[in-house]
Image 1 (cartoon, rainbow over the protein chains, first blue to last red):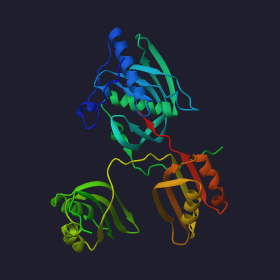
Image 2: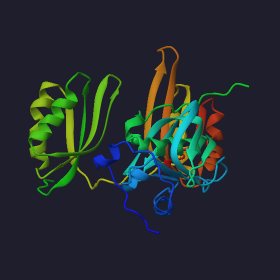
Image 3: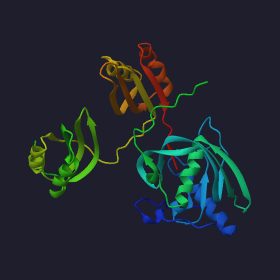
Image 4: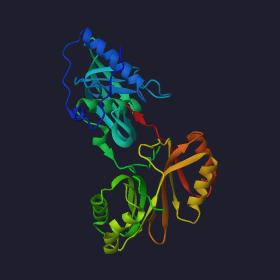
Length: 166
Length: 177
């Protein structure tokens, strides 16, 4: 296993669209192990996408289980992921290993359902909410050449929480 | 003090808001070969305000001269100061505080003194007076670092809430992926 180099913006390679994975083989498993190790070595370390290490295939890993008191699916290895449903919207602060020294506000769906292949090529359904849903959407953007910088909203956006009337 | 080395300066500038302030000031600085850093620019009470990091090998006097024609033409007030600064010094806030209520003297002093005592370092503050002339409301957004966590801040601010001010404390959960 190895910690791979992270591409950093303004490297234009980060802006390209990644291609679907077609071969579920030993080589893929080796890459997944390296990608996961790279994610865990990074600041934050809750998610990574293959294009961030210069491998332009539709692969992302999200594992927010280190965050206390949130719902999560454990370590999600997402190959050819597709979001099926979106629900709710929320502003949250994001940063990215490919954009060091900057964080900004981004609107994401609060709840998503998605389908992705696992490392064996089987199709798995997931439901994600909150922080995990945010991380998945952030990583999936990388697969389409989008950075959180493409989705920034005003620094002063939505500082008022919506009141919940019961 | 005149500085000849390539150091950072802070330009502070204010004047009645009108189109062209930013473009003309930054163009004048660009022509002198100055480099720009982080900036905060906003409209406050009908004035336009600039706080802008400027890196230049020129003296303070030379920098002032470089924007003098624009400052005069647009009727602005400006000054450069040498500052001890560098880029990539961002710290991540962990708490956001929203304060609002009927405007009265002392809201800011009360709130920020209370925050100071509770171990809160303010990194960003923006406030507005809204409502109308007869019934103004004061709205303030603060971001910063709560050394003892957001809950300690919430508890500390209870005494301000008693005075009829609404305060919302939210942890900022930054997702770095």
